[in-house]
Length: 187
Image 1 (cartoon, rainbow, N blue to C red):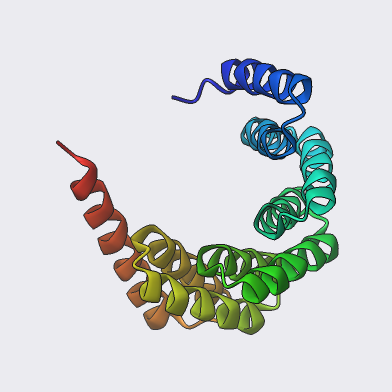
Image 2 (cartoon, one colour; image 1 turned 90 degrees about the horizontal axis):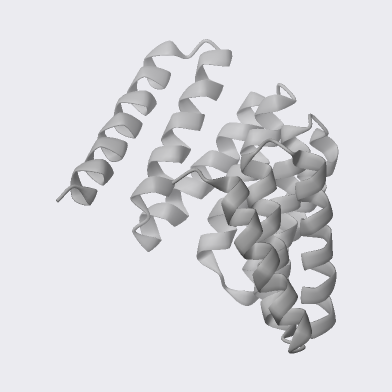
């Protein structure tokens, strides 16, 4: 509902309760959710602070999935700040963990994040390679939104290397996927 400030209040309450009862997993989740809310408010440095705390707790308790998600979130936040090498480093760490634990969803997200960072650096073919890997996994796991996102971002990169026809095809496929997802959500 885009009420991020209200969400922050609730996530802060959740964090306090989790701390009171020593629920380390709850602490990790609350910190990550606080980071997400600040990220959506474009408060990237605050988001990074929460993601870093979530990462530390997830490492302390040995939660590799939360660790991968924290690395991915850090990568996205640094990408939004224009700190692309840090974004690549964090996204690469997320990708390695996701592959190690077999989390195909986080693997696809990490590949997309790497593609975005390389696209921002002007390394368009490298970006396309990551987007294609993301697309393959999204297809395997039945993630229409992931497929649409991959196709859209591939189209953006293709435009930069003057492959307009291929870009048009990628955009068309992305539009169809987004439209089919929207239609399936309607009542």
